[in-house]
Image 1 (cartoon, rainbow, N blue to C red):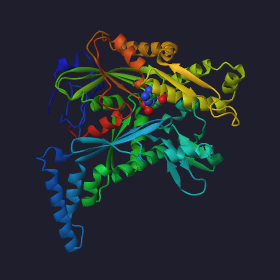
Image 2 (image 1 turned 90 degrees about the vertical axis):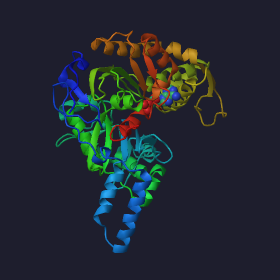
Image 3 (image 1 turned 45 degrees about the horizontal axis):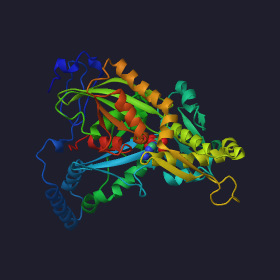
Image 4 (image 1 turned 180 degrees about the vertical axis):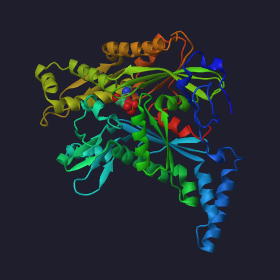
Length: 471
Ligand code: AMP
């Protein structure tokens, strides 16, 4: 048993302490008691992987000769699976899976991509469904049978639902829990079920992935436990519902990890033997989430000191800025009006704008051909050039919003902006150079972490690392 020294808590509310996974402890700062069950194999002298697989092979051989599934096979399976951990970042828009195999973390490709859209299409008549990119394609033709962003609804009660569903086009049935109506009410599905189908898709991809070849060939590998990330602001109901989604997906054991904690673990922060104040800045497609955490010196305890952000600031705002800039070079007034007044053309322009925005994270200037307004037009009737300087100048007010959100979180936690914080930048939009410069300018003494881990994958990597996978 280890007690966290009182001074490590530095006046924090002891009731708000949390324990870092994998570390043995039972009591924290004299406050609440938490018990973390460790997978027993981690505490025992661990035989090498080769020895285990060889042992398993021999046992399988004996079983084959004897003709039945003898006990040691089951034990061997359990011991091998405890060496492999699956972590999933179940995102609102995109999800990512990572596995940790004996200390090495790999992101799992699903149909060739590391990011899987958290989108599910349901067939009208049968139980058939598609998850990911295939479901996204169905949005054009079967809008009433495709569910996306179900994370916004998971675990919500009838009372919170109005606000959450404002931005979602679904018809909800709230007579018994929250159900999303599909096919004009012919079918209903819960947000947990949608989440579970996304988890199942990633689970299947992980079980088939190359990194597990060795395990699969020798043991017929299946995942039974999962660590899934949740926003730090999730309520108990939302957390319970996420656990249910995991169990529905076929996992016997589901553990949750807060997204900013996972991001910090992906960078190895919080596992060092010095106390650390870590600010996680997560700027995705639609929201900015910020969490300031204090990891105690004993590397066992952390506190979430403050959380904040901007619920309506994200990559989509920067797409609109670029779209406006793309139209600035178009001299023909009727062309810009056509883009602005026709929703389909505006959507097409936004798609081009997002590509330009991503290019501008790498280069100073990008020239593109605007989408054709009229299919009879010549192949490129209007081109436009956007520079990084123009983009940054027009983004100033959005950057200021992000800066203010960071400073507000620091103020709430009473942490000086000049202190030597560790700042982890995650989320796809944290790749925008102006975002990094903005953080650097307001936190001059901070150590920024963004290069070593892909910002889209950090949370999944941290989740995979969090239990029994000491890297
Ligand atoms: P996330 O929700 O974390 O996957 O972030 C998605 C957002 O990140 C989208 O708005 C993307 O356009 C944006 N994004 C991804 N890559 C880049 C990049 N290289 N530069 C700027 N924004 C990016």
